[in-house]
Length: 145
Image (cartoon, rainbow, N blue to C red; front, side, top):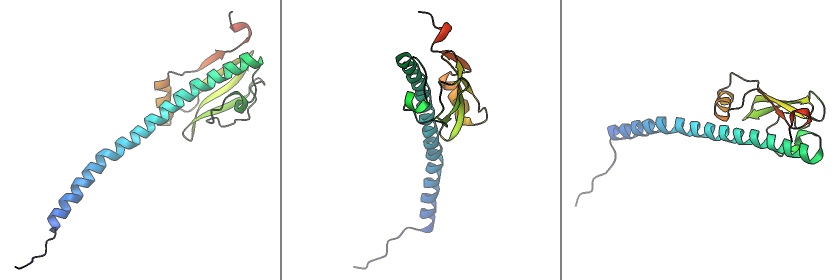
């Protein structure tokens, strides 16, 4: 009985490498897109939750305070911004990019507007979350009981 060496030929190895490269070129962009979609969904939920937390804090304490006391959302660039002061400002980050500006405009109101129109994530957050420049009224003469 004669034994022969079994091995792959060079052409078989090349075909396998080409097939793996083709699969990788399809799968990797989809994974990156899924990560971006998750980041956008998280940002939309955090924006809504931050506004809700701020409204709850304003109702329970009759005034605003610093961001880090009003909400546990950590996507603000200046968590020490004191919204009890008129014109206090902090930016909301999506990933590492500042996309929105939260600003105290007095009388218990907060203005939210987009400040970044060039970053793809910021643009998609604006499109999908439906947040445009708006003043949210949490107190004062704008609230009807």
